[in-house]
Image (cartoon, rainbow, N blue to C red; front, side, top):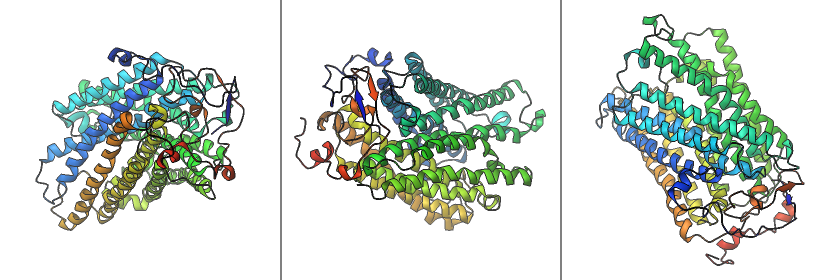
Length: 564
């Protein structure tokens, strides 16, 4: 992070008379706020609610698959449950998870701005997101959807009698919320940076969100138009995708995956950006290869638009098309590998501190590495034909999108929680939860790689034709129970910290960056005076920092009283 000075050269800001949390305590003051920090917290509460709904659906799926005959629910109910899980987790949790919460809270502070460029548009994006979520919940409560979150035609456009219309309407609205947020980020980063904060002094967190915003703006309109076409075919019988009406179902798959594969990077690029902040801070070392990491984010965003065809290897596309998509899919692994290598090099010879955020960062690297390497099997036409639509695919994308993105989200929340609330949680509980999540996640999804390799199809609610699969499903379900405990723990000790956690100063981790130069919690407009950036990003000194004792370490050692 960059070392900075304010215009008055103050080493540590005085505690403000009020902060963004105390500036109005009424419900209206929250629901009508244009403060980016409050809107970030509104998002944090909202996505936690949707995560709970999606996790409940996942637990029902794992219970159903405990026995080969699937006795808990009918196949139609099972279809609706796993569709609910996919729709809620993808559109209302994973996509907005980091940009709408951590991005909203931190980007203005990281660039020295008072707020985002369009505060009212920011609030509108939250309302649109909530309205979309409510629409999705209504669809589930009034019959549910049985098409899967991919809405493959012609089943979704002609044959399904479930609530497809309401659900695609919800996804359509959610897309607008993402676009509003992305526009706000891009304009803010271009126009509102503090004096001295050049592009190559920006934190990598900002670079990651900039690349994500570009992908959102270029890709989301495509899925919006695709969903409109689906609605047109379903309601008005316009022939786009259904052979009965003169359409082509493969066209839907091309359009859907043209957006949905870049959507994977909408979920994981912000996670990468969080990792860069955590690893450099807890290694007490300037991040290795800043420019390579920054440009690799843009490269991933660009290449992500060229790989959708590897989802269609078995759709009948020509061998030569498949070869091109396969080669490009392998190429996208290069910028991802650059990040991993640079993070590992940063840790190497660093003065590593094993606080809770670093536990999550190391867990992220392990899980994402497994997810990334198994993606290479699916990029190859030969192995993809064997593994297509099996549990191997389920395990792969959960390692990337859940194991990777959620570990990064939790690591980021634990890192910036003292900044958000002004209080510290119990670091020992944080380390325990990170360890339980890592163990539970691997026990849940490693068996699914084996299941997929053995030929267990995804989306089946029974497997009495192959009872030998049961032991792997039981292991997976046991792992999901451990995982659920790990995910629930932060909810309790973080809420506990709001009342009982020790108060902290502006920079409890001794981190670099503008957001650590203001009070915790920050004042409404972030800074008392406009900061001026005078140094490069992440100017840590590993030799000097070996002797640095952070405020968090002093609290853990009992050198600072609780509630000071």
